[in-house]
Image (cartoon, rainbow, N blue to C red):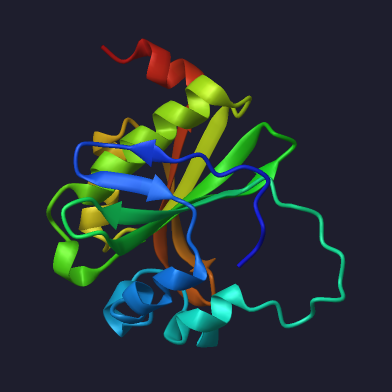
Length: 186
């Protein structure tokens, strides 16, 4: 897992968004590599996702890497202390814009947890960083994810037909949210 410059802990009513550690591999193993998590992800689960302990091992420790400006949070369910999801703001460009991705354990789908986590992350991004834009691509068939984005204030900016998302071809929506959109919401 790449080393991020700064991962603040963020809290919601039911979740703690925090940096993932090797101790989380056991929780991740329960859901992170499941095929249904990747149905609309644009690619199948990677070897590291199927074996999450590998995410915390540096295969080339001799390589000097620059810390990333990305944000990668584990979504810990406060009631159980288990990591049930991940939320990422990645491919941050010039501290101006970033892309959003999230995955949640299937047993937690439909409970509003992803919406809760994303709302908190969006508030942090626009209140505490210089980022001005967040962007997400979502398979048009992924009604749950598209609904999360809508509830979090993202605007549907367009639909790519028969486009390539990851390694798969599908129709997908492009959603965007800029700082001014959030300020304009009641």
